[in-house]
Length: 56
Image 1 (tube, helix red, strand yellow):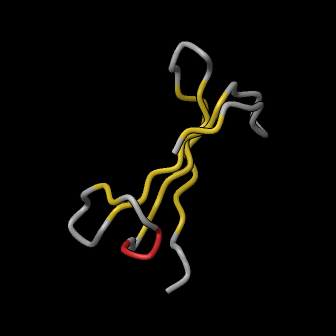
Image 2 (image 1 turned 90 degrees about the vertical axis):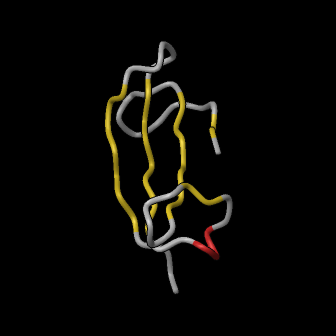
């Protein structure tokens, strides 16, 4: 999921990705064991990553 609005670390957009226990990207938080929020500049440059563990 990509959200086009300013981020806390002065990024232009953020991406949210969820991963299963094998490290593969999954579409739903329900099937995830971890995730990452990536803050990026408009040219795709990564500014910050925050790893998360969704509620089980």
